Length: 424
Image (tube, rainbow, N blue to C red):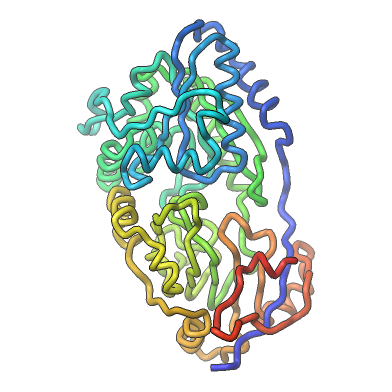
């Protein structure tokens, strides 16, 4: 096939609140909690570090550590990421260090272990697990990003409360909590476990982060333990308001250069691609509606974890070759989402993928296909779009056309470059 759609680039305009001085904001927020009344010199403080690629996370963690050192305490960092990193201490330590959260940079130790303490039984009858190093600390600070969950909907989704379950529960906790969610609900289990953790595990504070549509730090909020649920509800409203989105509501094909756990729990944010509830299509009232997704590669930071690749119909063979099958399966099975590890149809070149995917979009001719192309689901401020959107883009105030129509830049081998390279 040679009749591919032409493409052009659009630039979107999102609301853009931004924290410019991370260190100062973390210090001010933690200072507002007057923690010197609870944290005494010489006491240990465990600080959680998760597996997501949160903007400025190394600066946030360093600033938290500095605040507690200023109180005379002895902070340390605990990788808190359920079964990620292959479910091993070494793998989880490698993930946080890959984000720049190192002992040297943060000025405090990293204590990585998969061992947990069974704190108690939840009301629903299962064990509540908590990271052993964190449980042994005098105090725990829960740090994490608040944003819409990729598979659950409610007034509490991803954030500090989930971090106390899945993150600090390690592999053992994550496995049992995801099983419990199947029989109850995400909202019930997250509240049930969080209630026990807050009562028994010496959580002294939370540091919540919200990002804007440009993958930047928009808000940092220090939270007292008794306010976790109320504050997280408020922050989730902001997170949903600031969530980035694709510029158009429907597409025949969506090309994604990279997926990975640093981008989203499902590799690609299902809230952005419209697959939060069903693996291969949007629900009736869910947007956008994408017929076929093509995954072109994995991020370096995901360390072979291709969780979520099963939500795509097509892929480049290089993305499949980059998968660590065992790590991917461990993560998906722990989360109770086996289909997330399934392997899509794949080919060595973009041309081959386009040649099989374009004829199955319906009666639309390939040249007229609605195609969008992004780097990842955190990076959608600029999107390459096919000519089918050009007329609509011209009439919109919230998108700016920033390039002329031009052919898809396939090389002699039929391979596209990274979409980011087109912006120069």
